[in-house]
Length: 217
Image 1 (cartoon, one colour):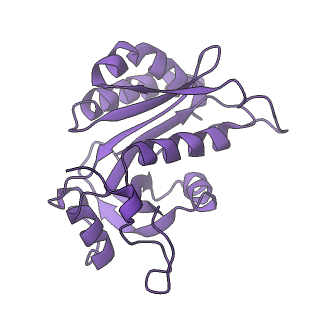
Image 2 (image 1 turned 45 degrees about the vertical axis):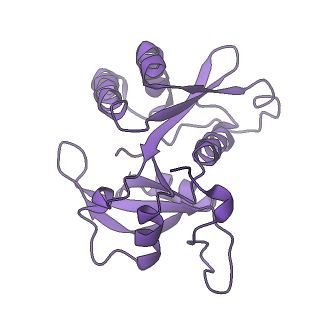
Image 3 (image 1 turned 180 degrees about the horizontal axis):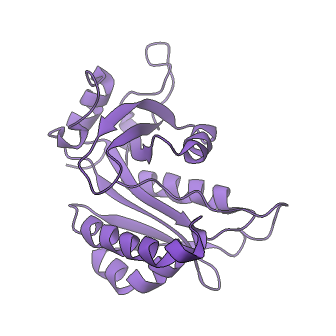
């Protein structure tokens, strides 16, 4: 998993920026064909200095090459006159292996949702920097989760990346705890979850299976 990008955004709204944007799904082969364009988009969206751009681009391509091999991999791209954003990921396996390295006991509701096949992991979100970038990023994430009938979205964020965590929190994501992964990426990450189930007295956090998001067996 990798921290979703938090693009630089210029001041001022751009009301027309979203009007011409269309979303398109790509399978793993289509994503591989578009890999160079996606890497260019990553460089445009990242906050890296000019000297770090090459390494960042190569690291993105390396992650993408691994992610497209995940079972159930799916990508959404946003296009206007050119590629302007993407979000991708894969369903979380029901065996709970995705949660290995979680700090402490895994909450029962997360364990149950995982076992029932209703959790989708968004591994990366990349959006071209413009006034509606955050709105487009959220639209991509929510559409990707809806397409997979997920009751819960999960993503991992470097615990030192406060701006990304703050942006996700603004969109309704919740901090579910810390998880530890093996290098080469960050080893200590925060787990962010986006509940899509209805909020009830029994589940005020929305972390319950919603029958409307049933993922086919």
